[in-house]
Amino acid sequence: MRQHRLALCSEHFLAWVPQQVQRAIERYHMFTPDERVLVAVSGGKDSLSLWDILLRLGYQVEGIYINLGIPDSGYSDISQQKVEQFAAQRNAPFRVVNVKAEYGESIPEVARRKRGRNVCGTCGLVKRHIMNQAACEGDFAALATGHNLDDEVAVLFQNALHWATGYLGRQAPVLPASHPKLARKVKPLIRLYEREMAAYALVRGIDYIYEECPYSRGATTLFYKQLFDQLEQASPGAKQQFYLSFLQARTEGRLLLPEADTVKMGECKRCGQPTTAPELCVFCRLWDAEDITE
Amino acid sequence: MRQHRLALCSEHFLAWVPQQVQRAIERYHMFTPDERVLVAVSGGKDSLSLWDILLRLGYQVEGIYINLGIPDSGYSDISQQKVEQFAAQRNAPFRVVNVKAEYGESIPEVARRKRGRNVCGTCGLVKRHIMNQAACEGDFAALATGHNLDDEVAVLFQNALHWATGYLGRQAPVLPASHPKLARKVKPLIRLYEREMAAYALVRGIDYIYEECPYSRGATTLFYKQLFDQLEQASPGAKQQFYLSFLQARTEGRLLLPEADTVKMGECKRCGQPTTAPELCVFCRLWDAEDITE
Image 1 (cartoon, chains in turn yellow, red):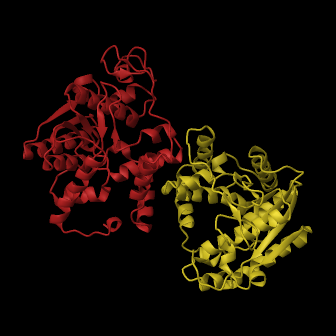
Image 2: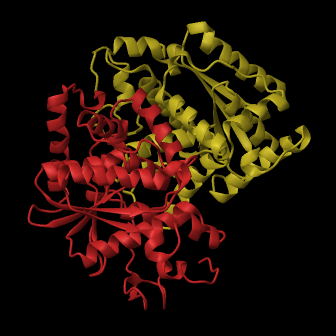
Image 3: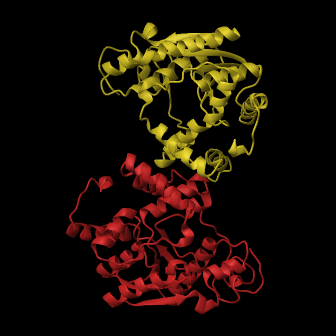
């Protein structure tokens, strides 16, 4: 690991990764051992490794897997199998939400019906809604996702490229619950590189779905990751430096960005979740018969 | 020019480029036709084209060429010839400052003597000092440099990578004179891509030095330019978007950065230029016998 000037054997590497996670949890006040945490798992290396690490660290965690109903190359079926297999091996509690069984249509189906709706945008919206609902209704203190440093760097770069100050203002390892029905969101893998997570899953023998989501092909964030891989290659530590110096500049008040929106939120008439819309939230409108794109 | 969705013949291209420059001069209030402008020329495509364009637009311009004494592949000699030839063809006024003749040592020589001093850093320091001195003593309203959009994007990226908020706060198309002995600095080529400038020099028949400075090999800004070339290739207009949305976010107050330093400046006891040092400015100390690196 050139960025840390560190080379570890398997055994020490398997101890080092959870230390990094523990450090992030404490440093950013993500959650305590007394709190219950819901971990969003996709079946990929990052989220399964995160679940594994939090279990190893002794946190009270429960998994949530959302079956999106993506049929291409058996993506959703295989990823659900990986999650079930992981949980069975560890006897770890988790729940599955099947989008099609629950709401009548899979993600590709609803995106197709709502013409003009981008599949990835729809998917993000649905996942955020379901995860938040599960975290709030289940009384979890936090919702943890498996975003690693490379993920955050790609998003930070995307936002910096457009100087999207609103998004920049909200990008953080912890997003506090700004409303009683919005869960605290935490990213415990923030200190770890994507390759480190892949190495962890491999060495730890975690069986995950190798394929990326078929809809992610050509995604701009993947392109940004390639650019930062080149940068990291030329200058080890560049990714970490980019992300951490951003957090530092903001903490020190050298980089003042707009506060997270203080928009007055009401409750959706159907699901009760917070929304800025007057009647139904975007999620609920998604399942309505009319072909409205907001 | 995919970023502008525009394709022009030679004739219209030669008219379009000065329009872009004129627009930048007016938009950012760089200087007026009544003001005298000193143009820093290196013999490269950007600065010679800038000089050509400002002459065509009817501004009162004078050139300044600084001979750095870089012997490799005859770099300094050839670049001076290009400048002299350009000026002779247009009967354009210009002055030459020869660093070695004036101060006793060339840039590589002084950098070598002051061990630990990076050549590019020394060169930048010397050029800034000489240009500023010439602009102030010659009573020019502004000092114009040939930085193009690619140059600014590379520097902006470098500063964003480190969230160097001090530098980010100072990066602008116009840097006002913050002291009576500091010249206003302007970058009229800010709206133009590097390839547009190369095309302009070519079509306009401007003979410039093709070689980059031998010391610039492996410079990180060249690497950043390559990264942004890839980005621009995938998403035409990305460079312009990155730079202009930065300026816009700052103008709109969405991105608040530290004010340009309000450090109290005294005057150098030898050259009289503003400095934060108590006795001699960094430039003057450069030529002192002692091997002090500040």
